[in-house]
Image: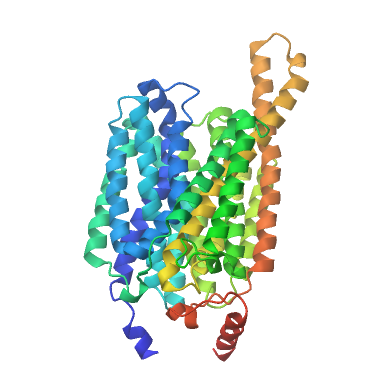
Length: 511
């Protein structure tokens, strides 16, 4: 034990501060721009047909390049990749803030996605290689999980404040001080373990196939939302994605130094984490969108008031992650946190299926948000940690990238799938009731608003089911103790969930 303690980086907690700042910046950006989009669209003359590219350009670059970014972190060094990602993200944000036309804005968002794909996996893998003690790892990932879960809601508040009181351009410029502080701090205090560097060559065919496959998948879901699931372009993108990703798997099983070693994803525990995390994000992304529109369009909240209304969810996530997940992770198996966490979140989601035009914030939306926050925070924290436990240190970057990939793809699916379900239910409701409204503009508007709420509640019922599916996968697939012990943690081979799990269970019994 003394020898183990002597190998711990004395500056790891300072490093966590700057990693957390960087992670907050990336997560904020996912929602902060949504609030500013109407103002930016009007200012830059972006057409209604092209406004989606402000979001899509970022999602395609980020989601498509994550695996590549994770492997670059393994090969080039995590600190160097982390700082490069921060500097590039800040420069792209400055370009977005200074945009004078739509093309400049779309280009800036694409560049943000490129550098985000370097930054996000490097940040998570730095935690994985710097925090190897079980209790410290629990605390570190508790903080990281709270930021990953609650940062989006903070983005809604900050986006509302900046757009309402300053200018939409500040939703981009605000990234620059975040990035500067994180980059300077990282250069000063982050020193990754030398043995964590991967010295193998880069798998170029794997990079090309994975990037094209993921871009096709994310864009397919984006097109499904706007053009429909059976449109020729949508179907072609999904078929192309399936072919490219199958070819990627075939290549990875044969090359000497694969971009994504298949052992990373075929391990039962990590596979369960990636699947359940992706499903939970599908449910959460749809909810953020629906609740934002409900509060602003139906209830008439301002952007700032809408952001503030999400604070109870943030508080719940921080509490669930740092006070429940982090405290219990070293005492109980991760599935005993992930399963109940997703169940509590689904109960919060279930409350929101009761939304009506005149629903009370205090008696319905507030308790639902608290349950959602507590549940997601409790579940996300062990999931984030477990996703990188047992992998060779040289593979921690790409294992971390898989976490981000499941989140990005889950977000794209959630937005497209739940939006389509909500739109269909709204259309059906309005079609059935609009005739009874007569010629009165006010009555017709009331029917449209009721239809909107009806669409949200139908989609939220689906989100409840998706969360319960995430619960089932977490309980059935995640069977490890969650302790970073054993040979894989020290850099030895990880063989999945066979003998390694038995050894791990024996170690736990000895404790």
